Image (cartoon, rainbow, N blue to C red; front, side, top):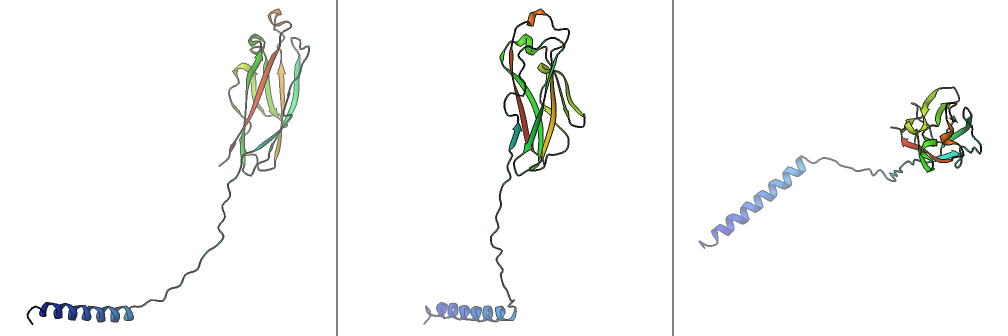
Length: 171
């Protein structure tokens, strides 16, 4: 019987604890419910541009010192996010000494100048402080000039320029 005594004490203690637990949970029971919030769909925005013209912003067959060629550049935000626009350029072929003498002017329709200077010194220039909203178009007047002081060292040369219109989402 001595060896059963610890077993009886353990069973009795377990029974008392169980009864206390049942009483405690009944006395402090709280009501509970859940509601599911379904169909949470997240879609990312997109950064997309449509540029007109998308090829050959400029073509000049016989540009002479002092002459200017110009064209309009229309940029449309064809994505889903507001965008900030930039412009840069690089020489993609031809003679560097001609490229280095060209002067570039970029302005909006209201005459606000974003860049005026040598094409070779154009880094990346911001095309406005306000974001371009989705589906909004903005138009720029872009001019290239062969300065009047250009000399015979660039006679009968050509250069090919690539303009890069960049877009970054506006926060």
